[in-house]
Amino acid sequence: MHQEISYKHRQAVPDLLKVAAIFAVVFIHGFTLFPFASTPIDFSHGQIDLYVNVFRFCVPVFIFLWAYFLEKSILKSGKGTLLKRLYKILIPFACWTLVYTIIKADIRQMSIPYIFVKFWTGYGWSGQYYFIILFQFITTFPLWRWISNKLSKFVPAVYLLSLLFFIFIAYSGFSDIKLVMRISDRIFIYWWPYVILGIMHARKNILTFTMPAWLKIISLCLIPLEIYWLKPNTVSPYALPAVFITTLLLLSLLRDQFTYTDLPHAVARPVSILASFTLGIYCLNPLVILAINYYFSINTMQFPGASIALPLASTILVFGISVMLIFFLKKIKLGMLVST
Image (cartoon, rainbow, N blue to C red; front, side, top):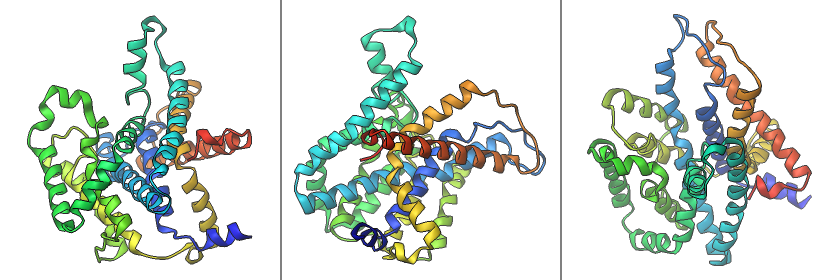
């Protein structure tokens, strides 16, 4: 009874953002699972690749919320939280990386350097780099807290500096450097604005942009527009000014203090469950996609609206199977592999 009351009176916006972000991750990974041939009223494959970038808010949202909730925990429980958080992400990272290594490793090239570089440094499976980024930030989190504290009186300057940083990354030619491209976005440098702002927001609500919620959501269209019109040469599709702007606008929805009691009952419980499953879905969806591609031969389909219906259908399928696998793993007492 106490848990039910606690759940109903919890803020819903962070969980809604988590669910939206994990759906976006699965869409990016699996939208080509069901191949299609476009009709005159459909998007072409090139256009679909362009509009997939609408979903690039996903990883920045996760990193911001990770820093936000970690700082909240430290303020409440002390710095011992850091070691616990490291332990909780290290277990699923190690487990699923081992699984993907077994599945994908080329036996003919088996060696410790090959396995380490290929599978344990962020390239082993879709989304693995997210863990590499978190390891970098969690081991240096006291430094980021100190920086955030020093900059707390200059929030507008942090916004401006972050925006200028992403403009530099996208339009300066920085990404033409071979070493930069090789390291890609696995290094912390491309994500520091979200960590600093997440810490700041945990201490004092700083994301107070006042505009209608629907306009904040529509702003996501700025991402493909920037890519189409300005053609940035960036090391990562996430390291774009438009991604930074629209991500902050989405995150500013956190200022809306409505709870689960404000959501329809048919929506509230699923959102609460899915929000607690985001780590598991993140780890499992590439495995589900690999399994479907391996066991099923899916022919190209063509019908009006296929370019919209099929990417959505593949995303929902992968999402649903991942959720069922999480329930199964929890049932057999392996929940530590899919949740924190």
